[in-house]
Amino acid sequence: MIDRIRQILVIAAKEISDARRVRLLFVIAAFMLGAGIVALTVAAIALKAEVINYQSARDLLLSLGKPADLLAPPVFRPLSLLRGFIEYTEIIGAVLGLVLGHRAATSERICGTFPLLFTRPVSKAALITGKLLGNVGTLSVVLASMFSLGVLGIVVIGGVSLNANDLLRIGLTLAAAILYVGSFFLIGLLLALVIRRPAHAMLLGFGFWLAFTLVVPQIGDTLDPDNQVGAGVFRTLNIAKPQEKQIMSTFSTYETVRDAVEQSSPAKHFERWSFAVLGIKDTYAGQPLASVVADRRVDALWLIVLFGTLTTGLLLLPLNAVNLTKE
Image (tube, rainbow, N blue to C red; front, side, top):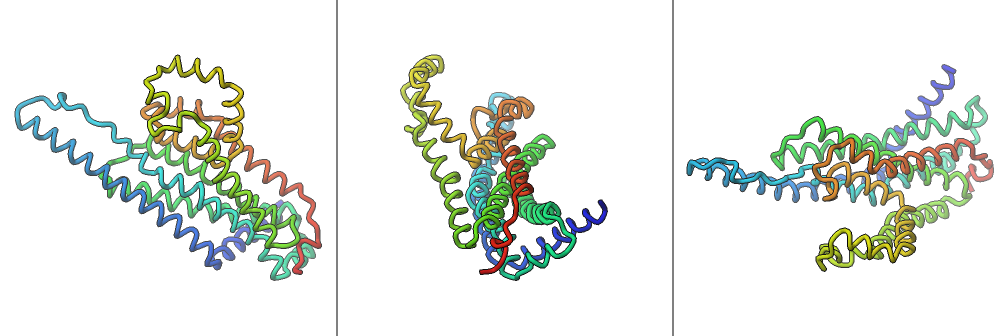
């Protein structure tokens, strides 16, 4: 048992070392961090302006001898500044995971180390577990760094302090991001191990990324009647909620199909969970964290099951020696 753990840790350390040498991974990670920081900075500056305007109005009331209660404090929702981080993680983070998974297999094939590994007393489970541990650990560091910069930006640029509840919400979002990006790593690794030609495996991986990260969520959003107008078609027509439900009940089949299309996308589940936990979606703004988690637990469960299913599939996958050798 101790030897097995030592093997897993050695393979994980090797994966981390190899990932640090791949420039493309640094470029993708830097682009994701840079884009998220730019989006956060713009939003944080706007938030700080709102805070300053409120404080100025409050000070003016106090100077006139009037109670500050006459001016209701606005709802700042500082965690909504992380919206850009979520959206870039959905798209660019998935690419990062896919490329890292592809590299984890093709680098061994190009160097011809797969046949050598299996001449040693290393089990397939130890090999896969070590690769998973090392690469998901690398992804976790990248994502944790990004969200840490987000917290720093909210506090320093936005001028808003965060409490323990806010940090817990960010932590839950980070965990979901690791599961989401880690799933794309597993997809990239699985395809690279199964498909003989690395180029074909990469093309298929990007096809999956394009379909379930960009196309499918966009189809679901476009077919949603409430997204046809900026403020929502029902809100624009001043239709009350009970009437809205009555109208939509006549399109139950349409709505079921549309929702099923959205539900097939891991990106949509990650987005729904993150937007709810961080209070970005108006419906969940100001709600207790426990009620939000209870309401969106299906999205979290979906991400956990996806990651677990892909991991189990890799561990049970019979490796073809022909696919693991350089052409």
